[in-house]
Image 1 (spheres, one colour):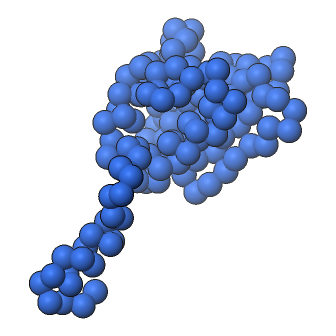
Image 2: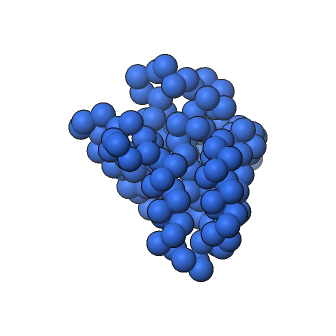
Length: 152
């Protein structure tokens, strides 16, 4: 099930992120990219109050769209749902805004609060940064194979 996310609603609920940070959007995009790649799901994250020079980001699993004033992310999400029509039922909307969540439900989409989605993200092994000094999984496997006398 793909996701539509209000990025600025999600940032305050993410450990280590703050709307006061200069690179808050990029930090959230990096976390979402890892999560959605590991889940093999698609997502579109909207950020409002885009600065001039803020470029959209697109990868295989994540599209970040910076909404230009006077438009806002809430409106962009609801417009996206309207364009989806009946396909909206296949999407999940992540927002702290009750009007957006209600609009998502009316469109047939699933609605999740930003706080609930942040918990899902934080509890996902893929979204947790690797501890410093920890070997990558492939290095760890190669090490065990070496110990047990096999070549990788």
